[in-house]
Image (cartoon, rainbow, N blue to C red; front, side, top):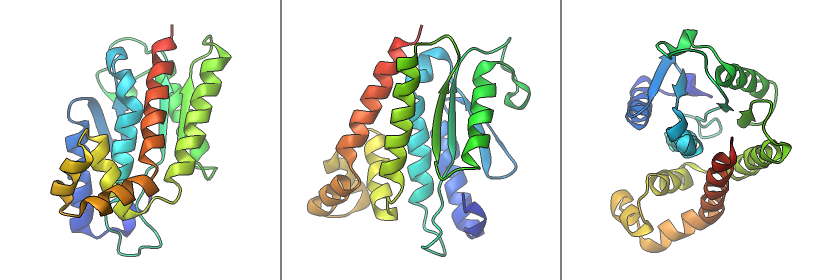
Length: 201
């Protein structure tokens, strides 16, 4: 979202950051500012954290107009696939259908995240993922560029002390930004997400 409002140099930096984040996985960029990522079952537990890393990478990117910051719409589809995944553009299966439909639904709403799971799974799981999506959106709705810088580092596994050194800011500033960005709630969301993933049969 709003990537066309970034200058070329800034957009290049953002795309480079996203490529580095996604390097361990199977992914493809298309139409310039859209991309798709495929995670194998053993990697699925990391999917929300990867999505939030990409989202904070976008939000922390300085926009020419602060009123229109860069952001991502993200659809996570959890389900089966058909055959071997060679090219994501032509990949088939329930996971890809769910992801695509979810992304279409986001373009018609104010939400930026949707997590869909295939039929046959317990309703409790479905409702759990819906709650996580809504809660995450509520947290990220007003997150600032400076807050996103801190959350990005914490999502990468850095401590607040390491983030102080990386961003060259005071300990109190980093702590305040982490708190106002609701880092403790984000940690809880990621834990709940992993618990739900482990419940999938």
